[in-house]
Length: 430
Image 1 (cartoon, rainbow, N blue to C red):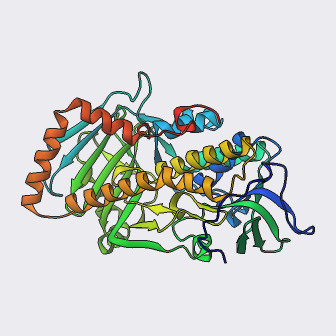
Image 2: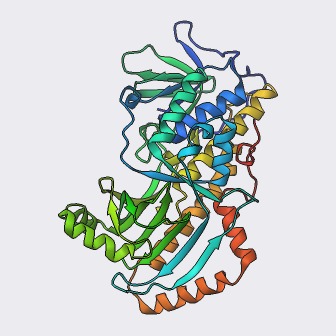
Image 3: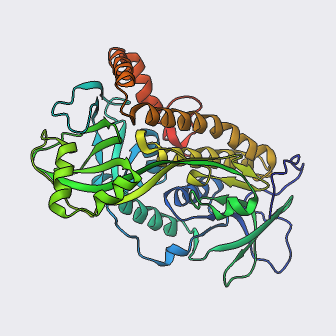
C-alpha cells in the first residue's frame, strides 16, 4: 500500500517516454490509469495529446472485454467539457447525436399541484452560437472514447489491478494474469467505490441522502425546442432534459423506498405517476427505455493525491445530480491533471512528483468542494415539505431571475468557464 507522503521533488527525473528506474524484469509505462469510464478514457486521450506519441499510457478495466451496455442514461455535457472533447477529436463522432440545451426553467411546487409557476429561467448561449450544455447518450460517448483511445495507441487492458506499491521512483502494479507493471504515475478513475483509493489508505467522507434517482428516456407528443425543465418537488427534483427529436431524458428523484416501489409498478400505474409529474406542456408522454433507480449520495476524498497517485472523477468526489455537474466535474479534473502533467514533462521535470500533484489538487479541490457544498445545500433546501422554506427560496429564485448578470455568471460557472480554466476546457490543445 501507499500512503500520503509528500516528499520534495527530485532534481533530475526523466521526462515522458524516457523511462525511469525500475527492475529489469518489470514492464514499464509512463502512466497507468485504472478505470475505463468516461473520465478515465478522456484522461488517456488528453495525456496522449500532451505527452506525445512516445508516451506509454496503459488503461486497466475488466469491463473493457464486455460490450458497452446502452441503459438509456444520458449526460449533460457542459460547454467547457464539449470544447475539450472537440479538441481531443471525440465530439466530432457524437455531436450529431447530441441535443443542445437552449433554455432551462425552474419551478417549485408540490407533486399534485396542477399549476407550476416558473421562478427562474436561463436562456441564451454561453458564447454566441455555443449552447451552455448538450445532452449526450452515455453509450454513444463511451463508444466514441474507446474508438479514439484505440486509434491513439492507448494500451487498453481488460484486467483489474489487484494491488500496488509506490515509492519515490515509481509505482508497481499487480494485475490479474500479467507481470508486474512499473509506472511513473497511477491515476484512479475507478468510481465512487474506488479500490485504488482504498488501497492507498485515503479516507473518504461520505453520506447518503436517502434518495434515489430514477432515470429513463421518454417520447412525447410536442417538440421540446431544446428547453430543459427542473421541477423542485418535496421528495426531490424532477428533471426533463431534451434529447434529439420528440424525446427527453428523465431524472426523477424520490426517497429510496419510494423509488424502488415506483420502478416496480405496473406500467399503467407508473404512467399515471409519470404524467402527474411531467405535466401536459408537451402533450402525451410514454417511456421508451426501462426505468432504473440509482442511490444518491455525497462523497469527498480527504486528499485527491497520494505518492505518485492522483484521484479523478467519482474516485475523488461524488455530488448530488441536482445541478447535472457530476460528470462535468470529473472532466474538469481530467483537463487540470493533464495540463499539470504535460507542463512538467515539457520542461523535463518529474511529472508525477509531489509539486505537480499538489498543483493538480490545489486547482481542483476548492472548486469541487464548493460545488459539493452548493448541491448538498440546494438538495436540502428544496427536498422538504416546509411552507416557510418554500416561501423563502421562491423569493430568492425570483430575485435571481431579475438579475441577468448574475444568471450569466451562473451559466458560465456551470459551463466550467470561470476561474482558472484549463486549456482543454478553453478549446486549446495541450
